[in-house]
Length: 96
Image (cartoon, rainbow, N blue to C red; front, side, top):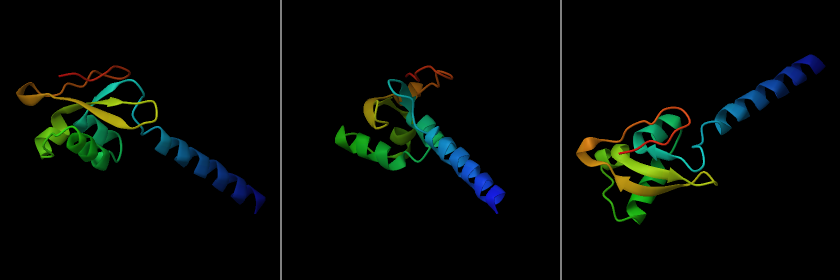
C-alpha cells in the first residue's frame, strides 16, 4: 500500500509539472496560434483583443502578436495581417 501511495504521489507531481510547463515564457512575444497550441489561452486572447479594441475573429485570434508578462498573462501587441505571425523558434519571440 505504501508503494502505491508513493507511486501515485510521484505521478501527480509529474503531471502537475507538465501542466505548469504549458504557460507562456515571460518576456517573450507569441502568436495567438502558438498560445493556443501551448495551452488554454483562448479566453485570454479574446480578452486581450477586446481590451485593445481589436476584432475577435479567427484571423485576429491566430495572427496577432501577444506579450507574455511575468505573471503568465498576455497583452496584445499588434495584428500581423496578411504577412502573418511567424514562430521565432524555441526560446525566441515570435514576430510579424
